Every structure is written in C-alpha cells, then in structure tokens.
Length: 203
Image (cartoon, rainbow, N blue to C red; front, side, top):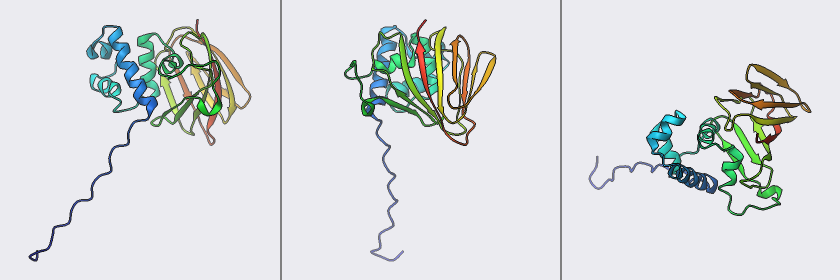
C-alpha cells in the first residue's frame, strides 16, 4: 500500500428497524401479565412450550410474536387474541373508524389481522378481518379459550379450515360455524389471498 493511502472503510450496516408502537405496547402488557400471575420466565416457558430466551425477547420488544406464539400466550393467560390486543389500546371507544382499526401482522406466516370491533376487554363477541397470503399455512395447537364459538365468513379467495378432525374447503360467500376445543389450521391454497371476517363469541 502506498504511503498516505487510507485503507477502505467497511460499509456500516443499517440499524435494526425500530419496533412499531403496537409491538412495544404488546411487549409491555405481556411482561405485566406474567408479573401479575407471579410467574418467572421459566414458569411461563414450561406452560407455553416457548423458550425462555424467546419470551425474554418478546417482552423487550426485540421481536414480534408470530400468530402461533401469541396463541400459546393467550391460552396461558386465558385470553382471546382480541382481548389481549384490546388491552394495549390507548383509548377504548364505542366507535372505531376504519383508518383507526388496529392491524397486526405475522410476517413469518403471511397473516394480517385487523380488529374490526371497537376494543374493550369485557366484550363477549367480536369481529376481526383476517388476510392470508397465497400459500400461508397457520396451525394452532390449542384455542386461547376452550369452547370458543367462531363464525368464519370467507369474502375473497379460497381457504381450507381444519377444526378438530374435519377440514372444510371454503369459497367466497361460504360461512363456517364451529366451536373450537382442540387444534386448528388455516391454509390459503391460492392463487389469490384469502380475506375473511371472523366473528368470535366467548363461551
């Protein structure tokens, strides 16, 4: 190397993307719930089958939970996903405008969830909108609350829903009603995304 030449500097790596506000508030609520139950991270790991390190990162908002992980946490805390997300809302209201409805995404599985019903922790019924991208396949090993009554109305695309031992192949306009006691699976075979409205009623 010639005298006076500077060695090339490495290109700095881009900073990690900051978590969105929903992720931060959700992380705070999850940490508080564990404290309220008097559980350590190890206790919660045993109850959910989620590793201690993953739980710790979730509670610090370093990662966003997948739909499957969030379902396990909801089951441990005896909450539906909608109730948990409602608990992180800033100002619950009787009316929520379309552009103010909370949207949560599971990028890993290709699932987008929009809370249609105005958030409230005491509601027994709620409506959500779900969108699964083509090829998305989500499995839940147990319901967040056993015996949940669900009405799934498919609006666009095609959707295969497995509840218990039965698999149902839905087309636009079809509505499936079922009580959820065990494992379930949602699969979008494509070629279009599956968009549906899901009505959930607590037992």
